[in-house]
Length: 312
Figure 1 (tube, rainbow, N blue to C red):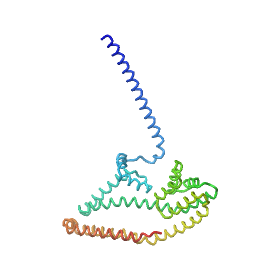
Figure 2: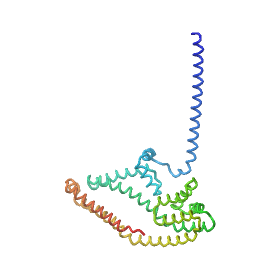
Figure 3: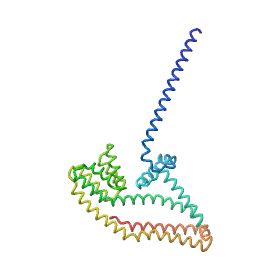
């Protein structure tokens, strides 16, 4: 018993020392973590000055899903200043609004149909914005080819020429070329970076330009004459695309006007005979007739759009 008291006192002192050391290590690690978070947040303030992002929780949850990743890729190709969470919340709000408006103006039967149309319209809007960005990039390709030809003729390497073109050109060419330059700077090969550019903005003109640059980079030969010829070809294709788009503008408008006329007829009938749509959609035959007419309008819309789509 006499030896037990010093042993207990020693063990107690050892536990106190270990406790103090553990608290010191914990406090030091916490301080280092806070300093690291502060340093990282201060460095990330530069690219996020534009506006404060909303719905961050929704954005984090969606990014962990496969559907969210696919939507994020499509959203990134549009160049819109929207996060995945913002787009999803706005899309859900639009679908709910279409459902309520259609149920109020027409009949409750049209609510789910309007919601489906709103869902399709949201993704059609992404495709339209992506195609619009591709068209704008294609229109910049002659200037890009001309800049690369002048830079390589002046003795600059192809990588330096792409960096210079990224600084000179406006959006979206400047942003996309900056991505190529950054990818090369962090260790990616020039061929991989250019192929990624062609995948983000697929077009025949860009594929031709990327192929020319890759072959020139592999062989190490001069590409000034090739780029000069390519510039003239791109200018001609640019004018041809503009003429074709002008000729097909009437057909494209027809694809949108005809379904709008059908919707206008429904509104006119419902206003002329109050409750007519409710009576029609209350029976199975009326619902089938409405669905058949909507299917025919949809089929006509896609057929007209397909006929007006001419690859140049």
